[in-house]
Image 1 (cartoon, rainbow, N blue to C red):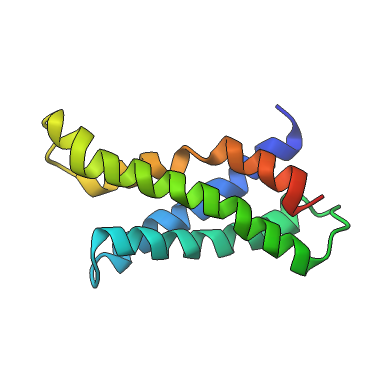
Image 2 (cartoon, one colour):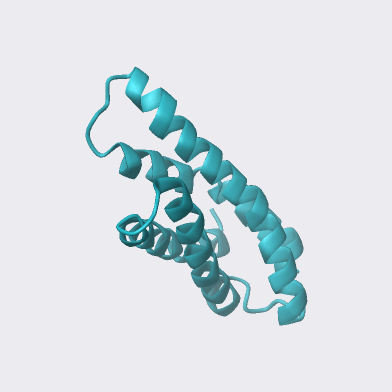
Length: 128
């Protein structure tokens, strides 16, 4: 594993924690599905800032262009996160008999899955 990928994991982990924690807070006032989307946006903003500062600091691409590609890469990732979270929360976990912490488990798995596809997308397009 490269130092860059490890730094990406660390900054991504921080952004994922922001994502997860904000989902819990948002879920106090709105539905689980809406909270997952808003939490993802909160985490995405955190990830962009941390990635630009610490992971891809040598990028020569403009911030505007980086942000545009960052959003596009994350649209794919948010779709992955949403489908996995909803599928686990409403279908898989209940069929397995899981009744405790279902939204938390479903969302945590949904957040982790796009780590690798996001890294490749950001390396190739967001922060060239």
